[in-house]
Length: 70
Image (cartoon, rainbow, N blue to C red; front, side, top):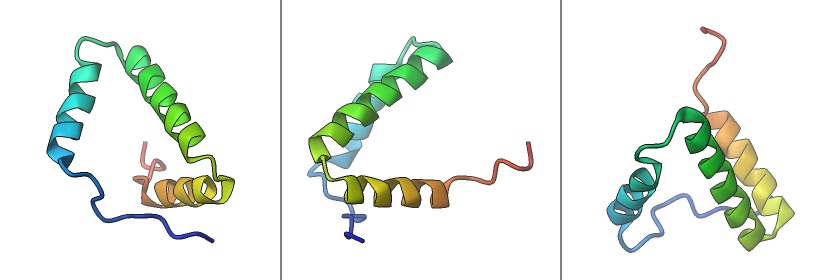
């Protein structure tokens, strides 16, 4: 399985995070979720490597908070 860059790989991660949050200002939960989905699909298409994407999905699911308490 390919390795992913898990350490910070952005020159200015705080700026990126601020821009990401600003994109969501004023959006409903549904609009925000749709925006996130579009962003994920755009980035997945850019990456294009299904093994890398499968690894990323696995890591994201592994890191997800336990939903069984809800």
